[in-house]
Image 1 (cartoon, helix red, strand yellow):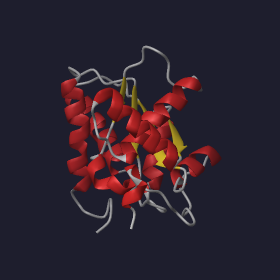
Image 2 (cartoon, rainbow, N blue to C red):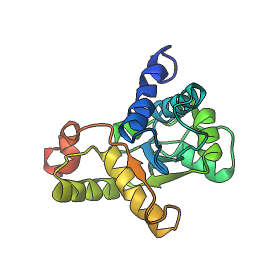
Image 3 (cartoon, one colour):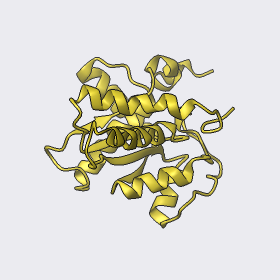
Image 4 (cartoon, rainbow, N blue to C red):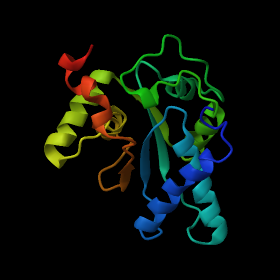
Length: 192
């Protein structure tokens, strides 16, 4: 079954929002950068924030949500920029980041609604930049992140330059996997 067709997957992804709030002492960040293929994590966090507000654990304030996609598969970016309520299927989708290779997300309308309600945005990063920045994160922080995570770090840099994320804002980046799953992306000599 695919994303958002399983009855409990979004319930599991809600834990991202609950853990984030708890770890930040019930004060949500200003910005969340999330690698959005099917978008279940983004949707689950938003649901968690609504539930926590209803419980009185947090206030009405929400982070600005940013969906990060691959340039070779960016249906949400295209739809967001065009002002659409849904996203058309992305033709000839390609990216080394398999978690971002979702040409038609079932929850497209939910992601687009969340991005707009939160005054967020959607941004696409090319594969080469994902890998370059992921290598940079590895060299500076000792973390072997996946290309999806590399895309989020690259997006942060671009969004800062564009003035969409200000210095001093609290930003959380989600890295959704390990670079070990993508050895061939980091060492082209391993490609068969």
